[in-house]
Amino acid sequence: MKQRVNIALALALNPSLIIADEPTTALDVMVQDQIFHRILEIQKKIHSSLLLITHDISLVAENCHKVAVMYAGKFMEYSEVDRVFGEPFHPYTLGLKNAFPSISRSKDRPLISIPKNPPSLFDPPDQCRFYSRCPFSTSLCGEEEPMIREVADGHYVACHHVDRVEEMREKAVREEIWDPSLNQ
Ligand code: SF4
Image (cartoon, rainbow, N blue to C red; front, side, top):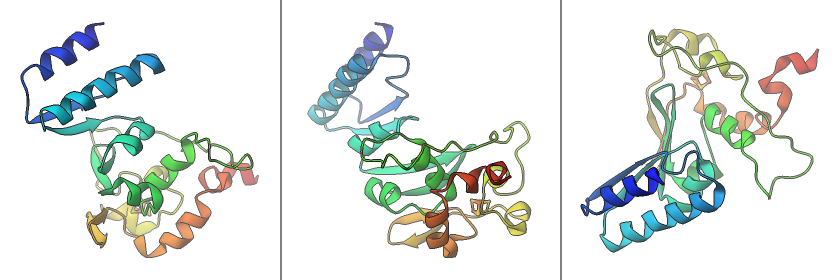
């Protein structure tokens, strides 16, 4: 209820930009849907922009034009939603796709979680922030933080090894790539 009141108060001011930070967290699916559709209705009515911050990939895929995938406080990948989820370049985006349930996913393809934890942001490392969890890392990744760069028109990625994207896409769907202990 508090969430609904806060959203109503914020939108009553007719903002030119709505920043919705996890707007549907802790709500059941039906209420999530109602609240988010109400936000979208008002956004369209007052012609504002919407910046959605969320862990819910399906909410982004259904409602956003562009997406910035962030990890440990840094941009990893940015482009139009169809491109980022349809043809991801970054290993973290590949890992997120594997971990998200989808009705179109084949029965033979298990959900794969990304092992280990993100680095501490109290003392962030001077290396790729995904280094400790990335199955495609090299020594370069442990020595230098990758800059974000344009890899295709309007598609930006922060990874040293975008040239290996075909290999990474092909291997990332295999559980043992993320968890080598499964090979033992
Ligand atoms: S820079 Fe290296 S560690 Fe970071 S995502 Fe790319 S391959 Fe993985």
